[in-house]
Amino acid sequence: MNAPDWLVARPIAHRGLHDPAAGIYENTLRAAEAAIEADFAIECDVQDTADGDAVVFHDFTLERLTGEQGLVRARSARELAALAIKETTDKIPTLAEFLARIAGRVPLIVEIKSRFDHDLTLTHRVLDLVSTYDGPLAVKSFDPVIVAAVRKTAPEIPRGIVAESSYDGFTSVPLTAEQKRELANLLHFGATEPDFLSWRVADLPCAAPFLCRHLRHMPVMTWTVRTEEDCRKAALHADQIVFEGFRPHGDRRPAMDESAV
Image (cartoon, rainbow, N blue to C red; front, side, top):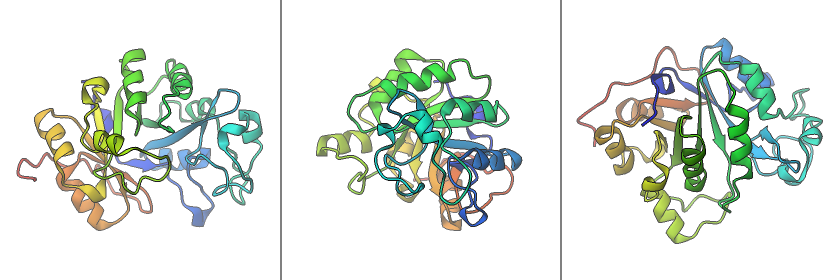
């Protein structure tokens, strides 16, 4: 298992340290700089483009964060770079730009978005870009096909699976009942062999992360922590938080609680 200590050494700012009230939006270079200034690790999302590049953006579509409509992957990286985020002058950065800006100053966890269609084009583009990155970096995904591909292609890069206990509310892509069962119970474990888990905080405590954490000594991040109740759960049942909407103080890495159930 390839799980360096930096994975859980400091709280992880969900999509950067964004604050819409202050005009700082998720997955932008300014959100990354804010996280770096506050000494938090950064989590970001990547999507593919029409010309095979990777951009730092969460949604499959443009509507929520730009004045445009349509799929992100229907436009080239250059076309996406011309779009403003909300009312700001911030643009959609490529992953290459994002890596250059962070430059190893804080740890970075890159979530590879997926349509669960077995298309590994984005995955291979991400691995190409991060292969020469000089800094603490890990990749993760909800999609076990992607995580298995990272294991095979770049086993030296720490890899994680993002998961939750029920996928009935998972609406971004359609999943079969069999896929939901596999994902919720980590039945892909033999193929993926993740180095860490990133589990939904509302589902804690539950069997899968408990067993991985206590029997395999696998670090568990938990997402997305937004409240004091979330923090209490994380302190008992996880090793680090992926947070937004507040600023945690100090090292929130909790001690392993052997009595947790």
